[in-house]
Length: 259
Ligand SMILES: C[S@@+](CC[C@H](N)C(=O)[O-])C[C@H]1O[C@@H](n2cnc3c(N)ncnc32)[C@H](O)[C@@H]1O
Image (cartoon, rainbow, N blue to C red; front, side, top):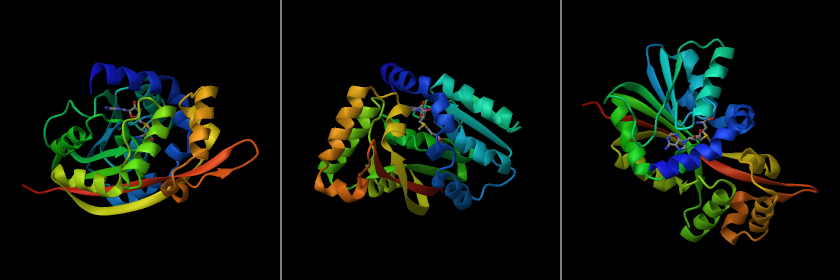
């Protein structure tokens, strides 16, 4: 990613490390346990967690493996990951700054690469997947999750505009079939694919990315005028002082072939 894109991510996530550390959807979201269950981590594994945020994925895998390298472009997030690891007495987590699209690791270094709820930030997502595949040992696994959208291009554009308004460092959320195709194009073979839904309260979601009052009003306005295709997908439910809505997440496990 360019320096300008990196600065945008850092400006967005730097002040949010506390909010991501305590966010239920990140710390306890259903995709975390499912990822561990589907991957079946082994005690001798070397693991790379890409775009670790406050480190929840690294923290979930660390008790099951030999070593986890938790990487991110935002220094405050890496600091939060290190703090949480120390608090839990997990001594096998290391933190290292790294751009997902240009990983500072040798080819075939890891048994498992994880990337959870972050892919939609990457401006060159195919380059990131090429890097994940390169960093994996032959036979190694990718444990991936990200939000997904509907396949219709126009409706997907509307949903992505909603996300981008709340978080200017957002790049693009893809439909499940596109994610699957991109992962396979990177030379990885999909072994499992699941879809989950998760519920959000509007103000907590918007405040996590410090959206202004004016931005929040625009976001609510967008939700009031959702395209028909997005109505059942985002399912907004209006309450007195707020609004609840649903987002969808894919969990995909893919393997690098043996060479
Ligand atoms: C929503 S958080 C990740 C959540 C985390 N993986 C978890 O399981 O809780 C998104 C993270 O992506 C990071 N990020 C965005 N673009 C990145 C890139 N190109 N390379 C590495 N990290 C990036 C941000 O700094 C932020 O910490």
